[in-house]
Amino acid sequence: MRAIISVIILAFITSTRLFAQDSDSDLQLAKQYNTNGEPQKALDIYQKLYRQNNEVYYSYYVSTLLNLKKFDEAESTVKKLIRKHPNEHQYPILLGTIYTQQGNQNKADAIYDDLIKNLPADRNEIAMLAGQFYQGSNLDYAIKIFLQGRKILNSNDAFTYELINLYRFKRDKASLTEEYLNFLPTNPNFITQAENAFATVFEGDADYNMLKSALLRRIQKDPQQIIYTELLTWQYMQQKEFDLALNQSLALSRRQNDDGNSIFELCRTLTANEAYDTAIRGYDFIISKGKTLPLYIPAKIELINTKNLKVTSGKYVQADLLGLEQDYTDLLTEFGRSNSTVFAMQKLAQLQTFKLHKLAEAQKLLESAVTIPNIRPELLASCKLDLGDIYLINNQPWEATLLYSQVEKDFPNTDINQDAKFRNAKLAYYTGDFTWAKGQLDVLKAATSQLIANDALNLLLLIEDNTAADSTGGALKTYARADLQIFAERPDKALITLDSIDKKYPNNSLSDDILMSKSRILIQQKSYSDAVPLLKKIADDHPNDLWADDAVFMLGDIYDNRLNDKASAKIWYEKIITTYPGSLWINEARKRFRLLRGDKADS
Image (tube, rainbow, N blue to C red):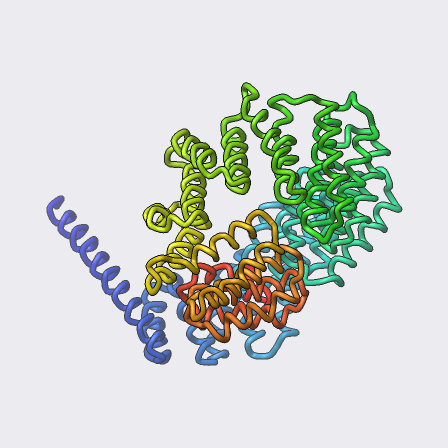
């Protein structure tokens, strides 16, 4: 008897496995029919599977019925499932989907409203039902379920995370704003998440103005709620209303009588956005709070650095430079020369070298700076490299190469090492030792630093192109001297030297190089409009030469960031993509082009 039972069980198991294998095979075949555009054949298989194993394959079966617009059959099938499983919500929701696709939205809404009306006071059940609507891409009713759930549970805080995600996915900006503004007072740590969400879905001034209005209403109602003021400051920053952003932050700082830390961080952001005057006003506020506060010295340092950026990034007069020099001198007088103020000595030396051309004073200052004990190694290396540059400009190439080589030796396998090596190669180029320079540049073109690799490759090609026809490199030596004068920010001398090349070496091969150098001088002088025709001449007359793609990208950048002509910028960025796909600028050009075209990141 036992043997007979065993045989029966074995036969049952075997047949079940065979049926499962057949079912899997049929399912794959049905999917293939759908892929091939043969839904009726797929339906025949799904119908067979559904009837053999009633409910496992119902979703495939009903979905295919809907694709074939066989609404009556789909409705009948789902109603049977509802009668069989009256407490499972997935089937009424599916019936509503059928009515929606039939065009009977009122019947669908009646089913959905009945589900909401009979919603249980159970948080998990509510979340499960809303999740089923979400899976059916019915976001509106998923939201209604959660909102009704709040009422039933008598909790205005319930389902906040779920609603935020739904509003964000739906791009319902007003509801997303209100949800976050209700949520943040008791959860202030989520302010960054809220800012990121707003930045993702907001599309212009109208959206930010909506946020501003909502915040101002709440601040008026609850002026002690700090989180609203912080968010309003962020909102002003997004609209580049920098003075208003600082005013909000200052008012909050005064009310709290804090140490100014939030002002300090805001000022750094303002400086990054080139809002120098506003940042200076903020740093002055921190300094005015007195020397006893921990941010007094950092604020004083950043104040001078910001003034430096303001002066050197815009058009300036000699008085501006001298005032900045005095600021650095006063700082060093107040705090002394130590490892904590070496950075100020370096900044002052850079100002004296490239703007004031006080080479002797700058050299003396950095020579003393590099002897100060306990300087952070990277800062010491940076000071030595700058001192090497001063030696080079001051016609002391031997001292310069000694310092570059020292830094190169002290920082093996680092970006600092590659920077020092590149400066040594440029020194050889400036002084006309093209053979040695080429050897160094050939190695550096594979540098891990993309910027150095790009510059090394360009300089290598410049030397090779212009020594091929003229082995003596006479014209190139003159051009290199002009290049050094550009580096030293002596534009008048550089232009005279550049103009002499064609006279002394007619029919030279440096036409595009000379145009690029003159363009860089004009950009250095902030004369962006004057640089445009020279760069266009490179693009038009030398489309296959060394600087062609650089000129095209520079035109895009100038129109984009200096002349505020986004339409022209888009044209030049697109030219990089279409004409110079192998350019090192291709990724940046593509990113900027898409941004100007209005492409949006995935939300």
